[in-house]
Image (cartoon, rainbow, N blue to C red):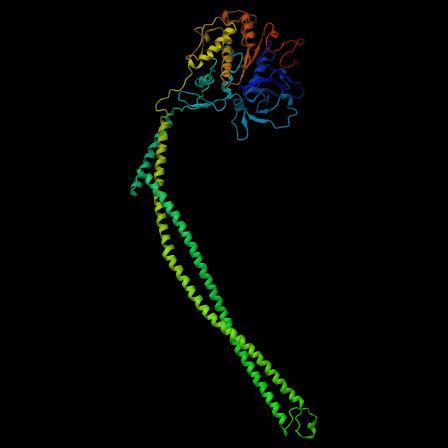
Length: 627
């Protein structure tokens, strides 16, 4: 599994127009054709699809085309194929995890990737995606002599992978873009790519205003620490007592925990006492109420008994009267009021009087039975009354006894423990205050130490790793081999100048060579860097795109004049050796070349070949069809 990716296809599409595309070989692909056939447009599209915010120039043939797609194979993901999509009018990108040909039937939602913006919680960036698949994400590079670092962006290595026809012949170093203030950063990038070691671990030298700010804070911290130490002295403590304070706090916390447990147990016991007292009160109150009821019943039974005796006396009087009447021979009859023995009395029946006497006797017996029953009930009530009086006495004694026991238990145990708990808590609070003061002093001392480190984090030693000749020795050897294969000449040595950050070929600075040879050595540098990264499993996109490394200054395409010298011109033999050499590249990244002229016999070489003929009647006219 390698690093980076391979470009499979570049496609442009639009409403009512036929799709145009270029399919690329996974190792080396050559696009040849005259000027104005779309080679540079292909370069612009690829650069745009790889995160540039510069849109491809609108040309006449591109009218009606609105969308651009780049199908790639991820070498770091086992050959997974994905397709990037951007509008040719600008904006963010979308990522489909499928081939371009399957987008029409794609049932998932493409991943949105922001371009030229920071990521959000939900939407990542195209920059981060490209860094991820190139194994370059999360890297930092130093950008100045003070050690300030920046996150590595994919655009930071674009000038080392996508080389346009203007840059390829420049006199300055291939690693330096010329952007103001970027030299140190660009050297750091080459050092990282050549060694695999980024600048994540370095500490930057603080600025003067930061130093002044931190010194002011340190003075303020010293003042606060003095105040806290004075407060400790008032409490008869010092910072050396911190371990003793910790020990005391631990002991107090343990004592409070144990005492709280004991107090809770005592509260449980108090609850038991209160329950017992409450139960005894309820029983006492119940018995008092019952006694009142019993006394009321006895009082009523006395009245009822008296009524019964009165009724008996009344009935006995009736009975005696009836008996005496039956023995009388004179007087008036109590039944008819006539004179006894007279003529009118004969109609009265003396049996009625006997009936009254008999009924009275029966009623008396009945009442006596009721009196007997009432006496039994009264005896029961009297016994219950006596029992209740005894029970109430016991209830009263128990109630007051339980109250006294609760009082004694509370004063003897609970009250004492509660007082101890208050003492322990007060002591713990005091010790905790001392502890907090000590912690504040420690925290401030730590902050002071950190500020001291910020003022001089490297203890005066700010010798950061720089780009050196030794960093790129292996790269220079690779470049030398490439140049020899290309027929550059009988090269004895290729080295790196720390002063110019450029190559020295056989003792001569690269910038002194003619335009053609500068383009060739620039190309060798870019391809050599990719091969060096890939062979050593270091991060790289895995793609190099070179626009016009040869043809711009080949003899058959320019007229010799005062503007050019012989050394500016690349010979046909070098051209053929160049193509023959790169056609043998395999497993060392993808090389895409845009040129005016191709090899004499492209079919005999192992490379992808696309020709723009600029001829309506032969082959493909250009990237876009002629209208």
